[in-house]
Image (cartoon, rainbow, N blue to C red; front, side, top):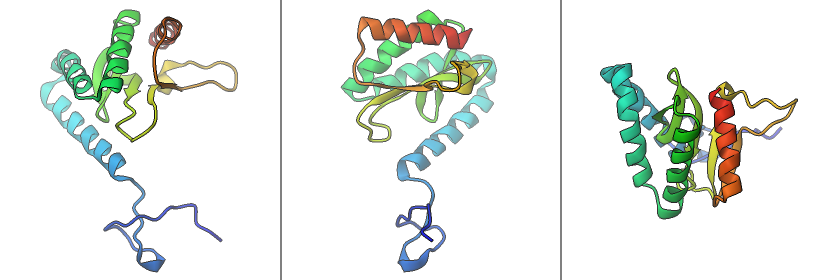
Length: 161
């Protein structure tokens, strides 16, 4: 029976055929390392300082993005800050995110971060975007129209509620 696990060359546990299994890609490992660093930094600062620095850190991370991702991230940041001013900006796995009581409600993932063809606007289960038995929790972004921006603002307002 074929295994559902993929094999990659790594220094982790062995599999047959000389390849090694490691359940995470280099990009995923980097994201986890960034998250660990974020948690350590937040613990040293305390909650009030972390909230104040969140805006600075998110803007700095956005500024580091390639042009296409940066333009989308800047616009998403403006929309979220306007539509849901109570959500606090913070980094989450190295991505711009917006939190209520320290818990991420929505986030922006640049296309470049995981070498994808599109950026993503995602929502956690705390957003409670439930709509029957099936609903979207993330959206692919390649450009933003006025209609897209209005739809995002409405989703963010609902999620922040």
